[in-house]
Structure formats: structure tokens, C-alpha cells
Length: 199
Length: 121
Image 1 (tube, rainbow over the protein chains, first blue to last red):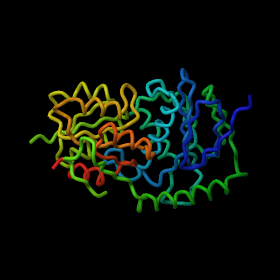
Image 2: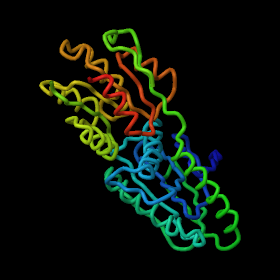
Image 3: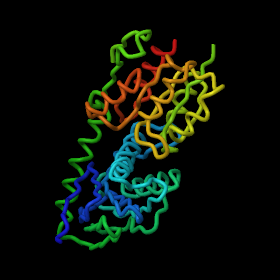
Image 4: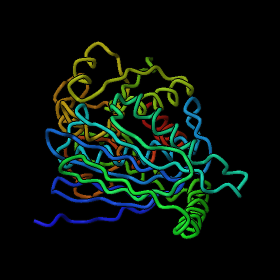
């Protein structure tokens, strides 16, 4: 049977318990593939961070990255993956935005963040291809955990740089003026004695 | 009056982040990795409030909330759900299980503290 092919764009994550090929194109961005070899469930995200995440102070950038990783882990778990069995592979983080002085080294920062996060979460990073100056096409087979990587040189460079710059602008806005976070205080049941609170 | 807050999350990163936020605001934190661990640590904890994730390995958040609500001592303890879920049907399940409130992630320290203060103080 032909496997479903799904493109994972910047800022997205996707998981599947059906055999699927998740693919993406990476410049500075990093894609993390998570795979539970027993449940044969896999998922992938595609992340870009606007600055250096401070994992001691949990600044906006750190929280943004943590949320992106948590969304992926949660999705894989919802499709039956066991978080204690998860293996990780990570790709991308190329240095392709050299002309932006403020974002210099953005690929390296995201790579460091991902490695650090997986380490804290005790999720084993079984293979990776991070950094360098390449643009990467990656293809992740969710049923086997295999990842196929194809390096692309100049051809798609401008397209990828434009996309990533656009996304960086979006992320910075999102961090400055985050979309409304939902807060609900339920009434009724056994909680009557707690007064309603407005978000 | 105790300032103990129990937090449940299977992610060490999220626990560390919540722990720091609450400690910096003067609360004492009891960490649990899932519902089972939370139930084990609850008795004698003197907890004033619980903040729980939903998707966790051994016992998920909603099962945990149901189990807490049948313990007479904790029948009325405020329980806040902090989750990436935003689906209305899951909210309804949490509400029926006995959750006091719900915050959708991404995690925001000020938002969490404002709700915690209202429910604990």
C-alpha cells in the first residue's frame, strides 16, 4: 500500500500511527523525528526560534521552543507512542541566514536547544545531522523510523531563506503579542465554593 | 497556612518551568510525574492546590482528578488543568471529572500565577 505523504511546514508538527512519509525542507530550521519502535508510531516537527532560548530563566524564546517540542511529544503519545520508549533523530540547523546579523547562528542555537531539551527529557537522540551550510530535504517513515536525507545546495537557497525570514517575523510578533490564552474556571459540580474567575 | 502546590506533568522541562514560576512567587512545590505518582504523594502533602497536565503515562489527568475527588480531605481542593489540548469535548470531560479550571498552553508564567493566586488565596 502506498504510504501517505505529508509535508510538515515551519511551526507545524504531525504524528501518525498509520505508515506515512513526513517530509520537509530545512534551512536554519530543525526538524525532530520521534519514533516509538514498539508501537510503530512516529511524529515530526519543524521549528524555528527567534533568538537564544534561556533555559534557566525560561524566557519567551525558551517557552516557545518548549511548547513546540511538547506539542510533538503529546501528539506521538496520543497516537499510542510511549514517551519512555521514544527515540529521536534531529536534522537541520544550517547556517543559511548569514546576512541577518541578529539571527546569526540561529541554526546552531536551535540545534543546541533541541539537543538540550531531548537530554533533559531523557529521550535518546539516536542520529542527527545538524549545522553546516546545507539545505536539507528530509523524509521520515513513521512506520520504520527511517529518515532519508537529501542535501540541496544553491538551487532552493533563496526560496528557503525567504520563507524562514517570513516565519521569523511571524514568530517575533507572536511572542510580543501572543494569541489569547484560554483560561476557564468551571462552575458547578463540587467546585461551587470556588468563585468564578475571569480570565 | 501551607503554601504547597502539587504539580503533575510527565515532562521534566515543564515541571522545572512550573516549579521555578511558583517558587519565585513564594509557593512550595511538590512535583509528580503522572497521576499515579501524584496520588502517592498527595496524602500528608498538605497541598492547597493542584495543577495537572492531561496526557501522562501511568494515570492521565482526568483519571487523577476523579481519584482525588473521592478522597474526603481533597474533595474541594482547587485543581487546575494545564494542557496543550483545547478541544471542547475534552474540557467537558475534565469538568465532569471535577476540575476547577483550565488553562491552555503555551505556558505563560503570569497567567498561571494570576489564576493560582485567585484560587489559593
